[in-house]
Length: 325
Figure 1 (tube, rainbow, N blue to C red):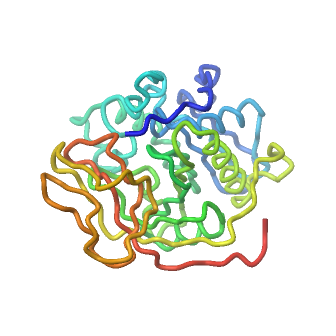
Figure 2 (figure 1 turned 90 degrees about the vertical axis):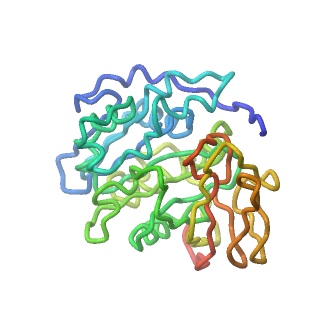
């Protein structure tokens, strides 16, 4: 597997531990005026630093909402503090994936314990009040950025209104457990709450930080909680001329440690014909189930039984931008 260079500095976030919310590393600011409660969340995974850089910058800037409420948070700080450049993938989580615990029944079950569950339970009272969530992530492999919009039309519509990145992934999540972006109202079609997850690029590349800044600025402006003059100059980049809406049809889940890909895929590869061999599981070929099958975020860096190693998707729609920057 490719060893990617660490191109960015990991910020010291210790200055943000104490907060008026009473929840360590989670800061909520209230404008006192009507408006939505918007949250920018970083460090759902401890080695995904681009979001932490952006949230640290906004807190040091002293950004405050003009309307509604704004929460700036660092999630799995325990994993982040364990980051070791010599073994960078190990800091993804402490005990379990923080982005697989967001089911109310799981959070309510006291018999289930882990570092990540404890942190999720600590953050839950704030998450329960959020109307619009932007969860900043990055990827194991060097790939073009994408939006994970969830399975519902409201997520797709929000992604299209945001306008970037160019690829919008619509999916049901992971067999291992529910993501924060799908928690309760975010994943309920009857609720006005909404959430997007942005995969900004490879974990440690400078370009991922630029994507995180751009999407954060656009999300805050779209929600109406700040004005453009409140944000740092140069954060927003040009919008892509096209957006591709990709529907994930199925995950490929490892059943053992015996899984390998047929080539060094990094993501968004399209196979024109059904039946193409993309890998082997326990010695058996894994084939594409239909024509024009796209690979979504293939990686073996967290390989273990039960882990999704790639998801298979199909382009449902391509949207052309007619105006805007």
